[in-house]
Image (cartoon, rainbow, N blue to C red; front, side, top):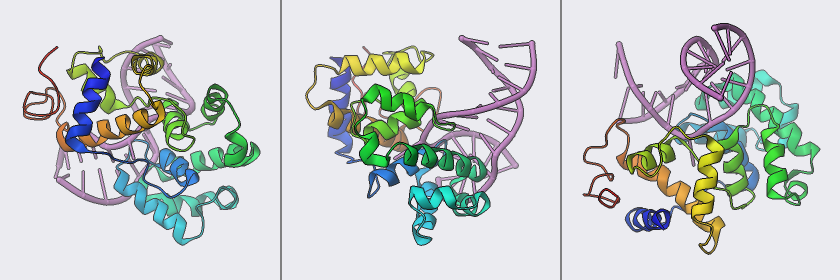
Length: 217
DNA sequence: ACCCAGGGTCATA
DNA sequence: TATGACCATGGG
């Protein structure tokens, strides 16, 4: 299967990434919201601010004034929007029993619950499912589309759910899907960071023969 | 000075 | 359903 072969090449080249950076499932969830369209380095600064104010907790976040929360989130950009989204998420999170309670839910139910929160879309939900709840969900992001479009394995304009199904089913026979999906998404991101920044055609990066990706086809 | 970053929502046609 | 505007900081 082509998907597993590409994974092996990425893994061989970049090594294990052991994602998600973060010391607790809740920190992963917060990071997933804060990293929306934002460089991770800036998310780290915002999380550091939360930690320094003992605010990396759902209870504290829901009762912190929006302006105050937004000030802590400032380095991660969109701070007013993200303050709102974090609060929305934390309300929902506390309301449904936090990690212990939510972890009893089936993956489909949990996913639907996450998507019901205003500010959590499919990618953020899947980040949380995979990296905080260890559910076998494949995260689709812009890098995934870019990489596999260039490999001509997808068109690029498919819907999110269509692509997610494609990857999950394409790797369904592999052992340990959670670990595989975890590393795979992380490798795609790290790969993009190192080699695939320029957009249209990827000259001189991993996508031509000199690097990770096998020659056309 | 410009472009992008580990997206999502909302208004409009 | 499908675009477009908007959110906003920080690094290259």
